[in-house]
Image 1 (cartoon, rainbow, N blue to C red):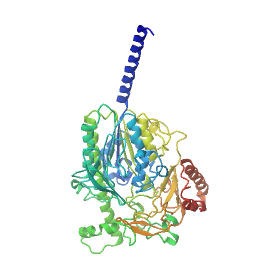
Image 2: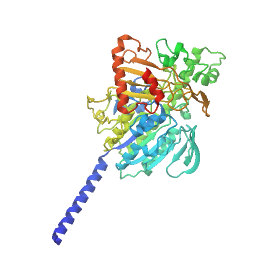
Image 3: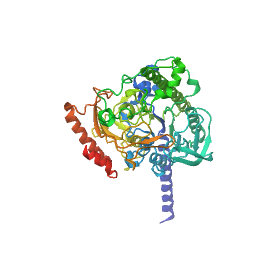
Length: 551
């Protein structure tokens, strides 16, 4: 090749190089920043914009304003309503039986921190701050500062990627590890927000788009709120759910949740009302109530009423701390001209019972437990003040965030992107018509929820309580560990069916109602086809499979 030709070739290649660099740089600038904010057990009834019974208390004015300028999702559900499994599903886009985070003890291996891996490889500067609860340190991050395990509300110990000192800390009742930590002072909601704001201002690479996962510990029980909220709602009567008293009602449940001849009613679930053999809040709050009222003897209904008031006020004071700290993050984005090019996601890892059916905690497949709030703000894509009713579950979170980041959904993820919903598109004909749920921790933690699975459509819910533990302790009954974890023998298998349009509070099990037989049969077919499709066949758990086949 002649020198002149070589000169032309070098010039051409140099031009292509700079065009490529310029294109990639522009692409990086155009890709939105992502701020993913997740609370712990923050149910939709405790968010004003969802219009539930607590909306009149105005518990979340800042979050409501974000919703007014973004999109509110009405039909979002978790696939396993307990902290570690739900977070593992969000991180992997996979159901629990695939990512193997069945319960609070199995965790998520480092190599499966898929969402962070894919986003970081796409060129994002990544950070995780707050409650993590996946047993391993966050991987594929440029920075992390996380609470190890459940952690403390006040003065939390933070496991950090930089600047810490090695110390052995407790991740859960079965796991202690030596990791780098820092000590902090203050309420966790304030401390975690301080850390995120410091990362945004001082630690992130400002030449790249950023992906920040900010996870509040609040309002996970038992609740501790910042002292400045001690008078919040002090003189307010908190509205009660219609089904707080005299539960379980006559038509609710099945032998799977009540036992034969109601033999399990005394132990199933955890409650607000006083119960001699159950975990209940009346026992916890009784001394505070007596101190407040100066009464030595209270009726069960009085104990239930006042325990509910204490419970809700402590919960909502924690929510108030979240809402105020959310505004601090929003203010930072606005003051630094980042709002227009930042997609802000607010959600919770699951729902929470606030006295409905007299229940506390979560775990059940009933809506109060599995419904996740989801609010998304992104001016470039979302029409303000819109609501969406696509049937979404938390396997869809990772694919959606990845599409926003310009990444195609990997084949190993089971969820689907709902970016089309954010754009205001109609629900595709092939979108799911039912969402699958499975709770694995049979009769654990003193909350005593039988293992079960099922599907929810927009109109109906079908649940099968198979009542068998998936571990190798099916035939043992023991109490062990500092937190008194309980494992029971099998409980009766049974089906429950609820018509959610006629019975949104799920008070009447219609499984034996012959009028619904055709619908129930269709749902059973869909349930088992879904189990086959996602691979939840229980082939590795023959005892569970045997119970299913018999019923």
